[in-house]
Length: 631
Image 1 (cartoon, one colour):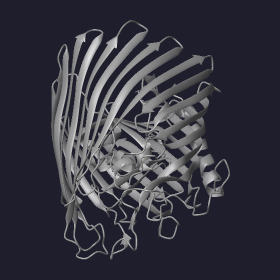
Image 2 (image 1 turned 90 degrees about the vertical axis):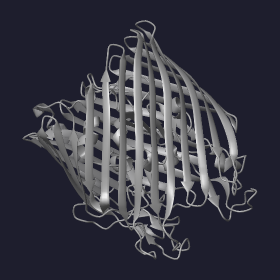
Image 3 (image 1 turned 120 degrees about the vertical axis):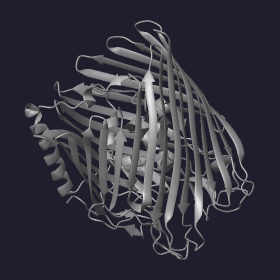
Image 4 (image 1 turned 90 degrees about the horizontal axis):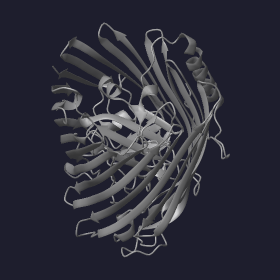
């Protein structure tokens, strides 16, 4: 197996173990060797992605490292939560403090949770509390149609947060005709999920509405704590998407997604069961106009409400209000985008640690792409003006060359930044003079696509400076007098990422392998919660109106603290799933996770923080079965 705990070195380019390098070579050869014999093409290359440059572009021409998780991928996989789905994406690692509703962190190429920009139907989702970032567990999976994951620095297009990349979530859209559906599932740990929806369109109007409810008794996420208790959860979500064609050249669309999640947790202090409440609401209104064969535009107004309530501690409420106006010009081999946007962030916290802060950010983006012959270039530049710290420029440059009709090489450089949260600036632990966290990213990629065979190899190096930390021994000055935030650390994320898919006879095979060196340059330690080796393998086959699938997930050792004293061992998981059409209107979906009942942990309750130190338990062998009806 490729799992190794040897250090990767400190060179400019990552150093890889011999076994891993050999496996990489075999993996690439396997995918390439079947190009001439491929019989069944995959649909991804014909798809269009919006996330790479904030305008529609064929995946076959995109130079950035973009993964599309399709609606079919989501349905057939049988997964129930967004963190669970994200853990199946190449280049992504996920950690959770226990079960499906527990606090989750998603690492794109090893970048911390707050270094990923997240959008739902183009609406920015974030928190201004503590260190910020998205509460992945609060985003309901049942309302999602597909997801685009962009890996690598993208602040030149998206502004603050996009140091590790961008995740853009697209909710379900209208069907071509009136189409209701009902779905119900039951599973391990007393899990029950119900959802219903309807969609359709007329000559000018299209719509999709759905609701979902999930509840679970959960399991004991801190086995060492007393008294023993299960940590259950309940989730209630609503989604609406309404569109109208005002003229053949103009379309207006309204989107809304809301979810109320109540998650029980163990505070590790021996107290009775406590709860965390999440309220997420995103609302967007857009007007898309086609002016002529070359020029189009989109005006978007949106607001996100993100509220987190701790048992007995009150609410931490973040409100993001955004207005953007984007103009695109497309010629046969060139495209130009000009984006002007304004975002207001607000944070309101409880009276025992009061923050009622507001900041304004205005940004202007220029994006230009050109193709000539076998060559392509993409240049992005952006200027942000933040009311908290002033101007901050971002830029990126990519160059691609088609070595053959199927083989392409890409080199890119870019920088990115992340603004301090309002809590880091203005809470009793905050310091108003904090600088933005910044990064410099360089990557080289080789990609191949022909027929059913696709693969991509990317070597990357992302150095992050001015990391914001809170430390009891901080010399910074804040009103609390201790644990003040300050800019101190540097981090290095370098590695090699390989992903691909092919068809071997009746089998569809997808695989990825990531070798990562996630290092704190200040202490030399491996960054918390990330492993140096992570791999995925999935195999699917269609048999008699049934799709059978198997997944293997393997991850190396990670650490719970800095310096690296408390380790969490590597693990290998086996998951299986099936999707079967019982009749033209009824489909059965079933999934077994952790089939061999592996005991493992991705987070740890450290000694000194509670009287019950120990790993947070991950789910054991678990089954979920659902039925979906649609006419």
